[in-house]
Length: 329
Ligand SMILES: NC(=O)c1ccc[n+]([C@@H]2O[C@H](COP(=O)([O-])OP(=O)(O)OC[C@H]3O[C@@H](n4cnc5c(N)ncnc54)[C@H](OP(=O)(O)O)[C@@H]3O)[C@@H](O)[C@H]2O)c1
Image 1 (cartoon, rainbow, N blue to C red):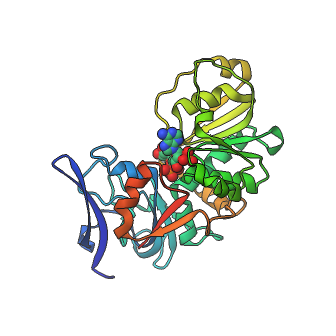
Image 2 (cartoon, rainbow, N blue to C red):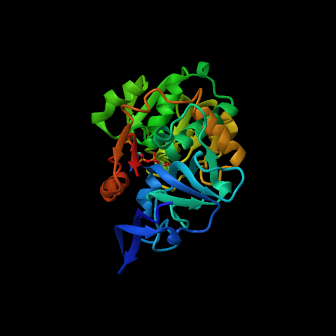
Image 3 (cartoon, rainbow, N blue to C red):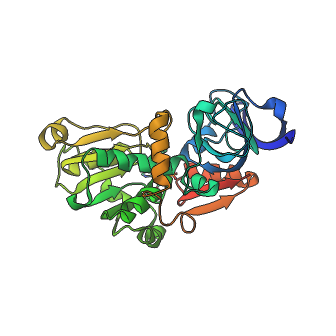
């Protein structure tokens, strides 16, 4: 095993974040049963937030990167052998346990998912936590009764990671998809992914405190939250569900009991971080089969190096990224 590897290391110096690519030694790796030669990581909104001092990272210095896919180079757990291709996302990775922006990583075996047949390591990271969250959102919507006959599904923050993958999976599976975005320049991209109608993000925010409006949506995938979630709850069709995963539009939500008790609307909380392992494996299996997006390897992805990460991490916080960015290690 090579003794020296490169990693992006994040620290806070005089209250400011500082990022540097450092050479580290195998002895610097944390405890864990599975050591992985990382092939790809990916950039998520949470990785951007991790660059803000003391917001996400719980221990400094830290190697950020909540996602990784690679090949096992050492294992003390009998479930994983040298040469196995694996995925590890979320849990404490890139938060309090050194993460994926590193050529070599070591994680507990209980966080590891075998790469499913039907996905390459690169595809797994194009999906990453954002794609996993999109699929989990759609699975939860369907478990709560959503079907394509019921009418349009609204995807908010649609040019982002969660949004792009959700638009693609829904369209591929025959849903009528409306996408909301703040990026006028990306309408052609959203149409290519399969959206039939595109709204400006300003059209899908609550402008007053009316609890109910015209019934429009059979379901919604919402990584935006805030006033957008207020709008969604007030415009869901009878029995419709909103799968809420994110907060790019804000954390505060004001609503009333009416959409829930008069229209049977469901608000479904989506968490990828501590999603139980049996469900996690099921979601990855579906992402490798019937829920594998159609546009994974072209329109949706940009590939960068460790050196390009600091710039990308600041762009994702400003909502400037389209689709998914992967990091080749
Ligand atoms: N619950 C979970 O387990 C989980 C997992 C993954 C992600 N998340 C959360 O989901 C959210 C999206 O993650 P992501 O990886 O898709 O991020 P992303 O790639 O940065 O996409 C976020 C998108 O939100 C939209 N947006 C940005 N600022 C906005 C604003 N002020 N108001 C309304 N919309 C805005 C933009 O899309 P448009 O320009 O197209 O409008 C942006 O591209 C984040 O809050 C993230 O933390 C949660």
